[in-house]
Amino acid sequence: MITVENAVIARGGFTLAASLSVPAGEICAVIGPSGSGKSTLLEAVAGFLPLTSGSIRVDGTEIAALPPAERPVTLLFQENNLFPHLNVARNTGLGLRPSLSLTATEKRAVADALGEVGLGDYGARLPAELSGGQRQRAGLARALLRDKPVLLLDEPFAALGPALRQEMLALIERLVRERSLAVLMITHTPEDARAIAGLTAVCMEGHIDGARATADVFADPSPELAAYLGVITPPD
Image (cartoon, rainbow, N blue to C red; front, side, top):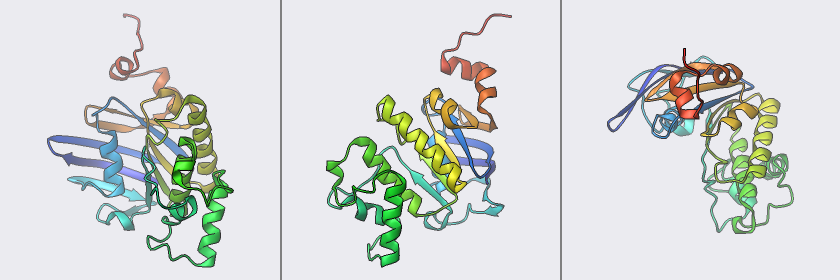
């Protein structure tokens, strides 16, 4: 489980106040307008932004003071950040060792991770030889190799077409179930939350006040969320 409790995060003149909990094996979508603080939350959990106050715990252990490399979390961005001169296997292997001095066991782990995301036959290819969806699969394989209990998704599939997007969401859902990960997934698309997120947290004007069952969030949206979604509510 990951728990963000009474966290205050400052970035320039912007401040986010956030509380939420996500159990293992669950996906929590974080939705809200651009500039409301969604990415600020993920960057604080990943360790790129400090807390002004509050706490971030994973399985009960406080991680807010840990540097990014020592946190039990993995962050997958919209850009897959693959190195164009390295083939898919070597790009994936960076999740284990930046030096790429991999043992035979680690090389087998890379091959297994690529197979897990459907790229078992693509290890020798360069990123330019892959489709957008395949590049994101490679980025996901690298993230999985880090074998951390918390996965942070910062709109990694936003640039994909509808069919590929649904395919990647289904893959994430399967991997979360198989590996019992706790996931925070930023999205601007309510359909993504409805598709795979059991929980949804609403981020509005620098505030996240817990997460609720996704069905409940959309069945009874707050006035601010209804306005963001374009939902017309009947007058009293």
